[in-house]
Amino acid sequence: MPIPILEQAQVSKQAEQPAGSAETPTATRQGSLSSPPNANQPTQVALGFHLLNLGRINQTEETFNVTGFLYAFWQDPRLRFDPQQVGDQVVRYTPEQIWEPTLTIFNSQDLQKKGPVQLSAKPDGTVSYLELINVTVSSSLDLRKFPFDTQTARIIWEPLSSDVKGVSLVENPIATGYSREPYLSLSEWQTLGIETSVGSKKGEKEDKNYARYTYEIKIQRRSGFYLFKIVLPLMLITLVSWTAFWINPITSFVPQMNVGITSILTAITFNFTVANSLPRVPYVTLMDSYIFICYIFFFSSIISTVLIHFLLNNRAKPEPGLRLIRQSRWLFPLAFVGAQALLFATFLAS
Image 1: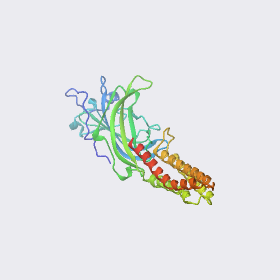
Image 2 (image 1 turned 135 degrees about the horizontal axis):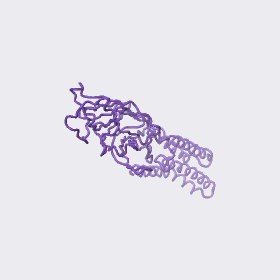
Image 3 (image 1 turned 90 degrees about the vertical axis):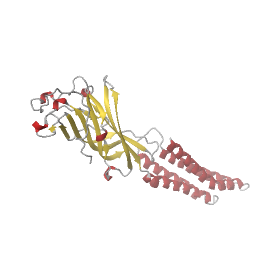
Image 4 (image 1 turned 180 degrees about the vertical axis):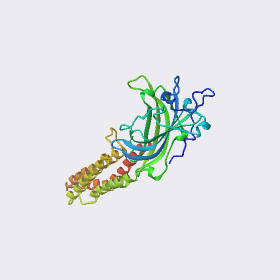
């Protein structure tokens, strides 16, 4: 669980209250507290997000579930009070009582539902905001290096249109982090770290610049499943297809063809398995290229088998057929290793 940082984080004061006006906020003043604290300049809001759990990642829909705490801190001089008069160092409020920045998750897949919120103010007017976030977020995936890929899952906060000019976002490193509990990591993914940034974006329909806070989670795929369930079995099937070159080509032509055709059908099954777990991307992934190279060698093996059988049927000159079958026994393995080595070097080096 995140440490209690509400008492630690501070934001810069943006307005000074005249001396002697540090009275305790009361219900008679709350009517004026729903407006932004600074009428002439944006209110600086320091944001931080602490990730509690990274839920199921749907690669086909390019979404992921996230749970965590959103922290926000800002200065509201109207909420200053004398702790001796109040009898406490903190005054708690409900969202209806005071102004708060209206932030929304820009890349939320569904309509965002506001979670439980805690609001409190210190004697100097520093307001602390804490909200539990549980949302499904859309984030594009770059699958070119699949299954050896590293992804960045993003959560983007922006103020609503009514708060654009009244809010200035900054990062709060103290309130930012992620849980290292075992339940955070998914079986297929490893969390590498997080990054945060603050920027702005111009509205598509309105002539306004939207402040934007971005929380990025770096995750790396654990490729062991794909290595042992797809890559290595497909490599063994490719090796099996070359046993046709060790069978008597004159008396066993049909068994030779059956080996090659069975290998192709098996590779097609593997391809469907991979395709069903990924989105329909417009580019070729590492796994696509690997399976395609296996296809090439399966077809080449069948063509070579037919050619060898054709040459050996010429009983007057069987030497070309015998020479081709001897060359195929070592040429195919060498070419396969070279092609796959070049493939992995090209994709993983980019």
